[in-house]
Image 1 (cartoon, protein in one colour):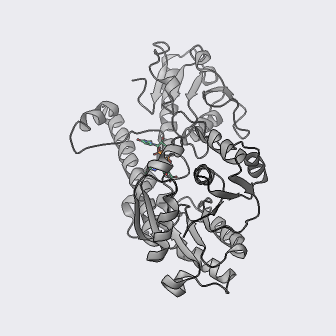
Image 2 (tube, helix red, strand yellow; image 1 turned 60 degrees about the vertical axis):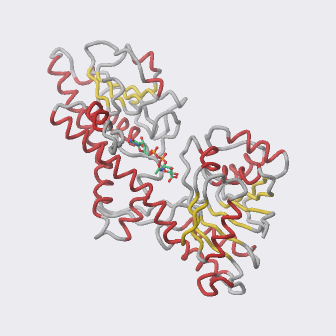
Image 3 (cartoon, protein in one colour; image 1 turned 30 degrees about the vertical axis):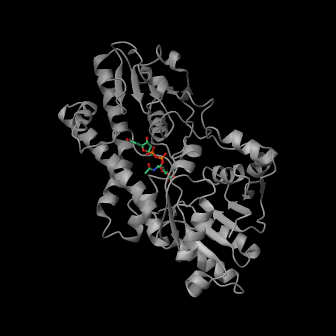
Length: 426
Ligand code: SAJ
């Protein structure tokens, strides 16, 4: 079958680049989003997110007439659902967060009225095991006049698959094309059609499996990274106790041909690595002990950094008995969740900087070269300053992100205390 019209539901960090890639291959693409501002921006040929090279591709796709955005789904031959899958809020600190599928449910219910025999529906959102079958069930309930793979198998009117996105923010345009794709159809025919669809722009291998394994594959990738980062974070705490430079230690250990330890930091941020392991832990809490512990190790790292700042403050005051706490100038370097991006969402660095500002009795300097102003909810005594200004206004430096602007800097002066969570000012 040939897919003439493709609809992408959810025009965020994954959906918009995916829609743009299909459109760049001269497919007619209908992007759907509940956010009117996003829809209007895209229809002007502009983008509402930060991602290198995406603006040009979207601009070309819209002006050449291959991509349009709308808030209401229209008929298409294939539907790709790329909506968020957050977790539900927890009541107690030690509760295990459970996935929240409400956006998948509303996307399924939104496209159901326009589905027709022969259509393909692909879930791209990172999802707990069983979510694709659940989505197919929601579609079947909404359209009793059509048949679905869960009851009709290969003969179903509608084909359903899970094909998780796996691209790295900041490299999405290249990775969408080059990365291998895991294609998990609910039946062999569903997989076959999905491969045909992705072949429109994917140059990597399209590897076929079933939908549950595809769901678990994506969760496994991000959990693996989370466990590895937890190992590095735990090492950093052990080394601090034993007075060993963890960065030197890791670079030495990594000289072994079969060792590749990741880098410690202030904690794990973003919307993927710190979220997806919970989808495994909440389903199999008895079995997922290592994955659960890794989450706890990474989530506790910000508090450890804050304690180091409290100890540094006490040390500074002891060394300067003529000063009071309100005269000690603390500067936090970096607020984003990882280097060289402007994304502050779910950032352990921002969390740490905010808590330092809340606990300190005078202005705390924040240096973040990738933003122009601080978010509204940041404490009043936080002040955004430039890196060069910080040189003259710092007694305690807290390095939270290894932005390239911060690397290879001469130390400010010999009297400042440095808490370097990224090992760039050793
Ligand atoms: N981090 C460390 N130490 C490291 C590497 C990362 O502390 O050695 C921290 C970062 O600072 C950041 C967090 O981990 O706070 C996550 O950053 P990341 O670069 O590891 O990953 P994301 O969240 O930007 O993207 C991940 C990717 N998954 C994997 O690499 C397995 C990406 O391929 C996925 O598509 C994406 O999650 C997603 O959408 O699921």
